[in-house]
Amino acid sequence: MNPFLSSSVLWTRAGCAGFVSAILFPTALFPAVLLLVTVLVTGCDRFKKPAPIEFKTEASVRTNMVQSVSANGGIAPIRQVQVGSQISGTITEMKVDFNSVVKEGDVLARIDPATYERSLARVKADLANAAAGLAMAEFNSKRAKQLFTAKLISETESQQADVSLLQAQAGVKTREAAVESAQVDLDRTTIFAPISGVVVTRNVDAGQTVAASFSTPTLFLIAQDLSQMQIEAAVSEADIGNVLEQQRVEFTVDAFPNRKFEGRVRQVRFAPTTNQNVVTYTTVVAVNNKDLRLRPGMTATATLITLEKTNVVRIPASATRFSPPAGITVLPAINTVSTNDIVRSSRPSGMEGLPTPPWSAEGRRPTDDERKKYEESLTADQKVAYQAVRDRMRAMMASGGGGGGMGGGSPRPRPVDGPTLKTVYVVKPADPATPDAPPVLQAITVKVGMTDAANAEILEGLEPGQVVVTALKSSMASAAAPAGNPFGGPFGGAPRR
Image: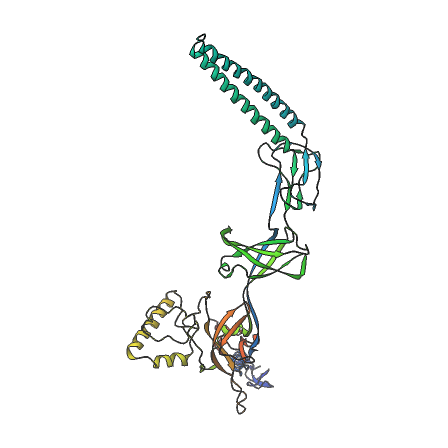
């Protein structure tokens, strides 16, 4: 059979309309026709009308805002004392237990005093013996002086009697000190409470031997007042600059996850703590614990309120970071805000003598219209200087350097000590005559005050109820990307070689 006289049927979509038709063609040309149809269908898919771009929006509201710092720490009594023993021996009597309430001077425990009573008796006997020797030395000294006066003994013998008297007196003082020391040791067999409070820890039982040869063993831990506690919170070095004394603190503990406790910053310590190259500073938070629900050793998750404002205009922080995608018409901002207290971004080298670009203080990229209007406002000499700055920044970026102040790159986040200028966008109402036209955004310059993790305070530029753009809708992210080569690979990549 002649292959050019037979035919085959290929079912495919005709053009871009999507309906199906049958095509008759010689069998020998089937591969070439199949390739041509595939290219045409793929190209038609790529040149379809793009999906309309939609934005996520949110209205500004008037509300209260809080700026805070998070930290963790342990709960502990304000004052707690470890009670130990300075002598060794066996515990013969235990007067208190865990949670016992004690007053200063109360007996906590007793150590067997027998050994120390015998030591005291021995040194007392030594003292009596020394006292008798002193009496004899005094008599001999007095007698020697009389004999020396009568010229019956030599001066040397008289002086020897005086020296013996001095030695006897020193011996008595030594024995008296030994008696006092033995009495102190005997008194230490009774353990007293040094402060009033609650016994938090008891480390010994009756019958246990205490050894104080090398260090003082801890017998009890007494907390002075559990109704007043403190949190020793570890605040990172990045946040410590905002923490001040008397700031309000809210915290929770695992034992009461649904209850929020409050306290006040009492002390911010200067000494740093370094753990695995992480530097923190201990911040002491005073806590009222009148109901005794908090216990020593609990872990507190604290929020330190560094700044509070009421009745402010608030928008999502994402609105101040939003940048319109390519191809969207953006109308430049026409509103003005006061700039006296604005914290401005640092200007790139070479910008001295040039007007400050409006986008420089806001740390953002300029629109084409903004850059064009700025260039038109410059004198001839300023245009030369401005172009030199742009050329130098392009060279830095090409060599791996960063962009910056002129809008050549995203600014690195940094802490600020005052308001900043930002740009937000609102969607202009659609023209009824062209409902399918792409959306148009209107830029608005705003003065931003405090910010938290999710929101930003608007000092000027917006009124409550104005709807601002916060992001592209997730389904639009891929649609906003530029189309690829319609004659690329079958899956949208580069053409195969």
